[in-house]
Image (tube, rainbow over all chains, first blue to last red; front, side):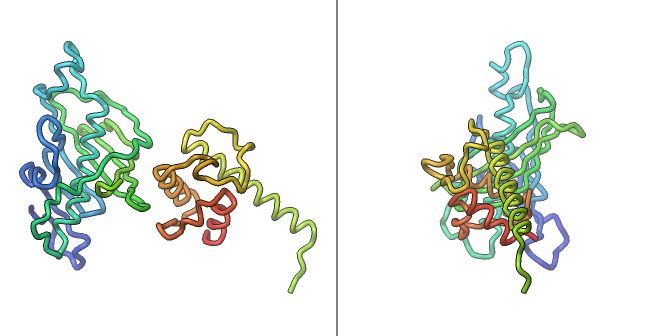
Length: 169
Length: 96
């Protein structure tokens, strides 16, 4: 967990970066469903960016489709949602209060709604998805988030999700 | 203290009806409800037997109201979701 910005006046503005090993401590997901390789520019509880490198060895390419490899749109959404979970869990692990024995990955919630999502480009083996998430308004245990995924300068998908904060729904 | 004329009151009432209708249309559009705005009454409950909204829909409304009117609805403001009238009352009391 590396602090990437110059020590700012307010800790809330600090940006963090997480390696795949860090992310495995933050999320309960594992192969073949761990869909984020790295996270950076993470402002805990606020926003973050992430990377998902798409390899021809991804298990979903075996069937989607056998002769025409395309990353399923729902897997792009899953990668976005996992970045949201990293931003959310970062708030917990970067908080000055000690976590104790608590496992932060156990607090990762669920996807509540894919409120809107537009896919504007095919994602194929060799592409590197740059993911972007901004947490928006909350109400009770729900939080609205704006997400996008791009490959280089090209937008691949963008939209709005609702996630649960924690597992009580 | 000035006294409102009949014309003033009538134009205020018309503006309010128009706003209620706009909010109904926005909710129906945002939530993809299969209902005409005109058949939703101003005092119909938004939850349960009314528009059958759930907690996910409620957050969609919170985002919609914030985008459209720059008014923030928080966890403590559950009175805003009583009905269309309650929601518009809430917005009118807070919008700039």
